[in-house]
Image 1 (tube, rainbow, N blue to C red):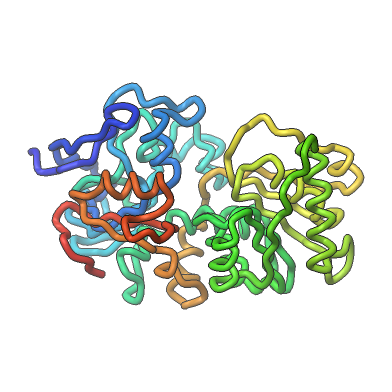
Image 2: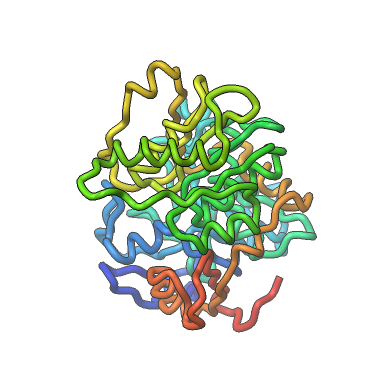
Length: 375
């Protein structure tokens, strides 16, 4: 049966609407009618470059993976869902039996089927099938747009809470004030962080970050002519400490740093300002070939962790924090588009601002049948 209009990437800067078959579900799956989908940086990267690292678009692929919708069909063995349920869609189906899955780190499953990661189709269509355990029920006080935002929120929960282990009354510095960085700040605030420092090179982003969740901001200085990245990072870190009163130990020290930018100088600066014995979590992906000063890492006995998507409990905690009103997701949705304007939404996200001239934080696309915003 074909009744599944989908937004398909055919090649670099080449997209089209295609009519795809409605997916057939297995006994433990649900079919979700997709109502809201946010645009992620990875979606734009595939659109612009046709690849991310080793993941190459070699055949037409439906885009999108930050979605929420309404259950339209349930498999015979599914007891947890019914038709009409509103759900946030976790877009990675795993094998459940490998060591990574059984240890709770299913995001590291070698056989994961992740939406809009080649060769697998994404969620920007009318229907998408997924295991019932990946269709997370939305509380009544959360909208479908909130539901679509749970995916990037889970990334932030994973890096700040799961990997970073942030506790109440600890301090955190977050480099990069894009959507993931802002959500990391929101999670830190919800968990009771005593200090949340936002770092970015764009003043308007810092202004938004402080109004949203940050307690302090830092705008790095411009680099000096002939200065190496490591020299600049050390100078920037010293200035940051001076301006914000950051100390190496005690209550004015930084317990956790998150780099959500992927910029080499951000990584280097973060390692320089975190306290001895502190933790650095790398969630942003930029140029993978970065220089790390081991003369800083070793004597401070730092803990360095890579963050990849999200794992067990991250969706649940994200939904709980949003439902309890401890963070606001709707403030990050700056632009909304109907399905027929998906290309306009992608172009605007690529440019960083909409037709209204305002900067885009998160663009949200409604499902094929939605011409107006609904909850």
